[in-house]
Length: 179
Image (cartoon, rainbow, N blue to C red):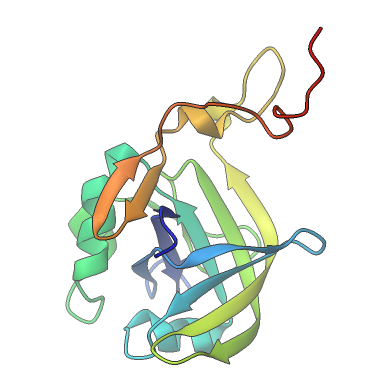
């Protein structure tokens, strides 16, 4: 019951034509140096053998405007549908991996699998981040800071989707000296 979680769409497959999309909420950062993350997927899912064979995937962050597609992708199988066509999302060939990323995503994280850990109902794909693709419109023109807080990111909490709330502090604010 560790919620909320990011609701992401993972793209996988060796090309745009042969790719699939899967909604994942069990994902996160594992390590900074080298940059590593994970996704956990049930072995019976259509995307599982695709990722296992290719040993790469892309994590695409989702937004409020992508909520319907995010949910639809999570409840339909790529065995029965072309999820790109059904959702209207735009595949773009990967830069550092063969699988495509989603053009509409504000941030796409290209990953290469280092190990697969069977854990029970899900297997964890531990991966190294090999490239990050960011929506240029989210860079602040004055400071060049990346403003992911302006993207309207989607979160998942116990069966429901939410957008992020209002910022209430910045890392270290509790110990910052007052001027």
